[in-house]
Every structure is written in C-alpha cells, then in structure tokens.
Length: 400
Image (cartoon, rainbow, N blue to C red; front, top):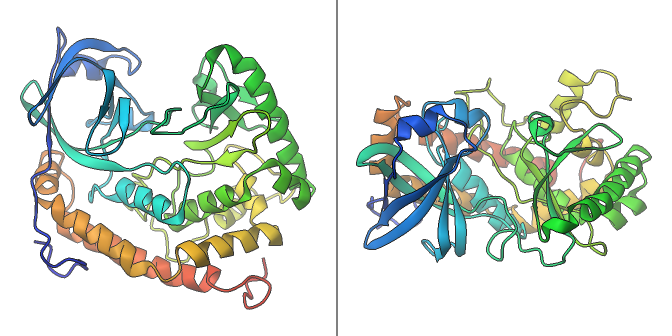
C-alpha cells in the first residue's frame, strides 16, 4: 500500500490490472518499432481475459513519444467493442506514459476534464501489455481523438474535428494556415467528401476569431466560439501546467455551418503536472500564458509564432477572465479533496503493475513520484483558489 496518501475509501486494495495479450501475425514487435508509425499490421489476435479478438490491426502513433524506447500504439478492431465500459469503439489508443514515473498524469487530466464539464472529455483504464508473451509494460487504454458516438460525437455532414499543431502540422499531407500563421490540420470529419467545404467554413470563422481577439471585440468572439468550452480548456491547460498546450495537440471542433467553434477535447498530458523528468520545475503559481509572453514574445504586438497566442490574448479580456473564474468557482473550487482522493485511489489500484513497469523501463521510485505529484497538485490548488476563486471585477485584484 501507499502509506500516507489520501484515500477516500480506506478499504481500497491493490487490484490486478487487466492484461492485453497481443499475438502478432507475421511480424515482430521490433520490426513494428523500427518501421514507420503509419504502417498498419493486420491479422493479429488480442486476448483480454476470456475475450478473444481476431483480425486486430496495430500501428504506431504519437510524435515525440514514438521516438522513445517504450512506444504508444493504436489498435483497430473489425467491429466496435465496449472495453471496460468506455463505450463501443473500433479504434483504441494505448498511451505509453513513458516519461511519467507515476503513470497517472493523463488519467488525472481526463478526470479533471470530466469534473470541469468538458463535453467530450475522455476516460481510460490501465492495462498491462504483452506482445507475443513478452511483457511490454503498463499502458493507458483510451479513446482516440476521432469523430464517433463514443468519442467526439458530431453529426452534421459538415462537422469537422481540427488540430492546432504548430510543430508537426506541416508534415501532414494537408494543412491549413490561418491569417495569423496558425497551422491547422483535419483530425477527422463526418463526411470525407465535404472536407473542403467544411474547412472553408472553419477557416473563415477561425480567421474572424483571430481578428476579433486582436481588436478585443468580445461581442464577435462570443458569436464565433463556445466561450465556456474555451474557458474549460484554458483552466485545464493552466492547472495542469501542460507545456504541450497552445502549440500542439490542441483540438477544436465545429458541427456544421450553424455551430460555433468549440475547444477540446483536451489531450496529451504525460509531461504535464510539473513533470521535472522532461521539463524544469514549474512553480505552483506558474502562469503558462504569462510565461509565453515574457519568454518567447518580447514584442507585445507579435501575436503568433510557434506557440499559439490565442489563449494568452483571450485571458487579457475581462469578459473571458470572468467566464474562466465562473467555471472555476462552479466546477473546481472546493473540490481539491475529490481530485486528490481520486489520484490516490488510482495510485493504489495500479501500484503492483506500476512497480513492475518502472522496473522494466528504469523509472524513478513510484511511491515517491506519486507523493510529489499529490503535493504539487495540492499547492497548485492553493494558487488557483486565490487566483480564480473570487469574482473578477469585484474581489479579484490581479490587475489583468
């Protein structure tokens, strides 16, 4: 057991994490790892307890994570299956969490997204992956970023799911550049034949949004975007100190001509929550958008570069700041114990598997890593209660 952690149910015990036993068809895992992540390998078999699944496709995924020893994968089944109550899907993602000694950061961020009310927030479960009877480690199984009834549920024939990716986007076969230099790619679309029409509409609205932000025209901003979803995205990104936010793995969707632009779902948190394994330490009062201004954009008139300035400019507007404060007060304030208890229970439940994982991949001490995570989140909550817990314009004296 993890002595000293905050556990809401003292009867929680370490449980056996489900095993994913994958048998490959005519290829080795080493060959998959050495080849392009885009190559799809068919005809594999997957056993999950008493469930046997044939004709499974596997491919690599990720950008920076694909370059690491422990790699993430995408599995695709011949038909939709509901795994662990996460909903019926054909595509499933196995997140490697290679940089995360706690293995808990992505799961914690998804829990926070659900707590805060993000419409298509993801969920997931931990599994131990074996490939051809060789142990590969502890993975996090979740939905992919795609349009589906049990993922991002868009229905309009012109519905589109878009990624802002200023790092890898231009490597895609098709990408779109906004007037302010943002690189957008199509992650998924309801009807493939409508791609050009759907993206013409999305780009038109996104360019209007950029101009409205430049001109501090909040009336137009509120007409173009779902403000609440943008406030949710901002809070999750800021609270988690997600250093991937604002330049890659940032998603938006629009469900047809008559819909607004929505932010989300949030994604990619393995180096968030003060993960000092890959980043210098983030203090508990770290301001991500503020740091972008100070460190990367010395000219205040320069709005865009590699790091998107969208949220850095939005939070300067009193109306948007009020919405951020409202969402925090209604969805996060006073829920510190709920979040810490969830993390603690998940930590206890995966402890046996996490210790095995960390030994295989030479990660740091699991118990100490979890305690550091809990401590940082606890202090981070102190800062957010102070910074966003008051009604802006009435009690808040931050001077934004």
